[in-house]
Image (cartoon, rainbow, N blue to C red):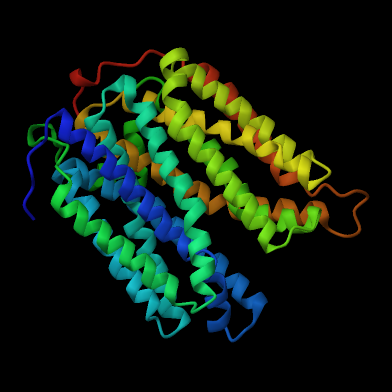
Length: 419
């Protein structure tokens, strides 16, 4: 495909807006199928809810595994061939895959589609690398925050749209997701310029692109591996929300599907406001290190509030506090991106997303097991909030680590050679 040359600052601002839109539409497309995928799996499993639940867990594990493997691959490919072709091909691939899943005649075909989805959805690190290319270091945390806001918007509108359309036809949300992804790709084909100049690109090698080899970059700069550890602990703590939040709300507070959907919408709105509107001003005034530490401390307070609250109303008070945790992630990414050169941004973001995939492999089992253990009959006491208290404890560890590594000075990436 024709590759537009790198654009001046004005058009690049429009390109950043496109990246925001493309991530938002990707997240809406992903969120649209969330309410219907479990039911579709159960239907394919012959109506066996228990068996369908096991298959659904397998689907989630496979998706996370694909993220773990392919996020650094696509990130490194973007370092070699540019961000634009990887983003566009991923969008086209997602659109075709959603069509594939909409027409899947059996559980095995649906599973194959979910595996492909895990591969094509690994374009998010490339979008992050694009942001790093076109944004000066001092503004990257705010730009990464906009990507977080895009996630929040998708988290709010995707499931709501999927729930409504899925009640009409469980296959319809897949067609909607396909349309969003393909329209997004077509739009980007005409307006998205390339952000990585040819002279700044790095040769592709499997040594750098595989999940283990990509971690070599994290060891190359002081503090980079430590910041990655801060992130992966945070990723793991975050897994408590998709893993047990619905079960917890129903068990402890008696929330029905409507109440849980309303609560999830509050989470998405609050997260979007924090990452889209607060990260930039906070970092500008206090710096990225304080933003990381402040966000982590708020996350500890939010998880502890949710885990200890005796009523649903009090639990809701923890959501705004938990949302302020959103200050940490974009700021940590800003610190990390400032430690590598332009030809390594894709590899860095790929490695970071690979770690997110690793957390996705570990988290669901860890938190569901914790929840089941602390509500099991025959125990002397119940502690249904134990998974959230575990997440709070993980963030305590992350905060202590961040206090140490976030103070290390950033290297001058322009003087470094690619790993």
